[in-house]
Length: 179
Image 1 (cartoon, rainbow, N blue to C red):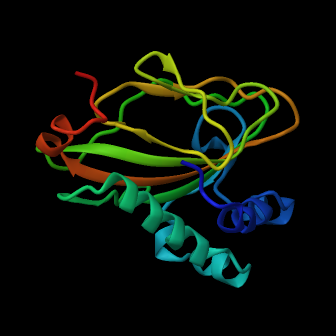
Image 2 (tube, one colour; image 1 turned 120 degrees about the horizontal axis):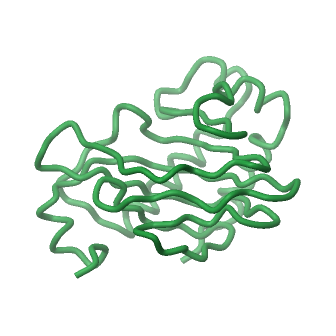
Image 3 (cartoon, rainbow, N blue to C red; image 1 turned 45 degrees about the vertical axis):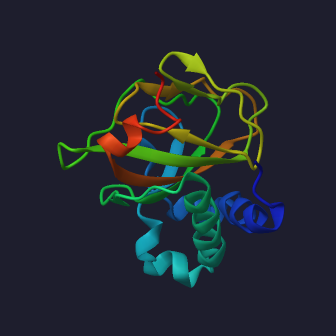
């Protein structure tokens, strides 16, 4: 499955403008050269003033939720919907994400908006996942350790990530959990 470029291009264009990257979160948010906007679902006023493409974010989320069809879930309140721009030298460190309720598992629905020249691939449970631009992938972030391959070259890795907490019992019965 690929998401139509007419939905992803406005987000990519906005995020690659240096003046917009400058208002994004400090680069110290994660190790390396990464900037991100967590919880864009709350429509930060600075993003509204700069004509951030919220409509496309909402439309992509509808498409992804239609694909994965969770029944018992709620949005992650810490990071929610997030945009991340990783520059050369950045790699997501190995980690798992927690959920506020014991009966839930943190899940992230991710979309690669721009692939770097080298690296940037997600690593889930020690497996490198080959993802192409405008292609989504699911990460059971609370179940499996995940990270990414280090970004190399001048082309940034840009992802859009939607975070949810999904009932663990539902996930364990799904096709996304390794049996």
